[in-house]
Length: 157
Image (cartoon, rainbow, N blue to C red; front, side, top):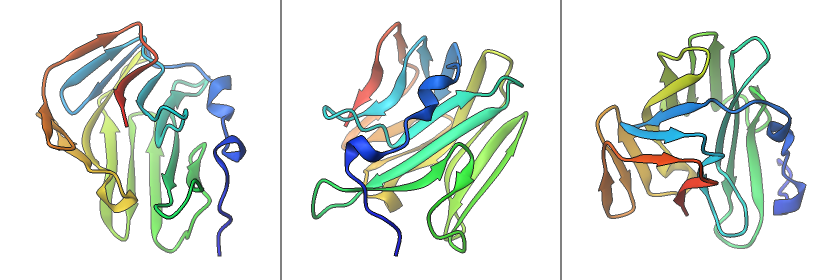
């Protein structure tokens, strides 16, 4: 079994890497925004940063429903949870994460300072968040073509 962790035990090495200046998530634009999604407690299920070679770096985790424990799935592009079920492909052009052969997140079309998430489905991780290149479904809301700039997070979960 994979170790359940408390929030403060999750890897936060992403703080050592540069943010993309611009992130598009399912048509929504984030400028100088620290996190796409973040809980009040500080948990960010999906974090995207860039390496010194301008390649995407990804961290992905899930919250367990029964208590305040978390499971790390991907840490700095390395699979740390059930490698037979999770796959990540990364290139300088983007990345694709699958769980049980279903796309969790696909991003690309980036430049040195931007990246676009054009397919996202966090429902297998227990979050009612999913979308494509045109709209982000966030709970019962649909969000399209919004902009957030100079903020800590775009979407509170």
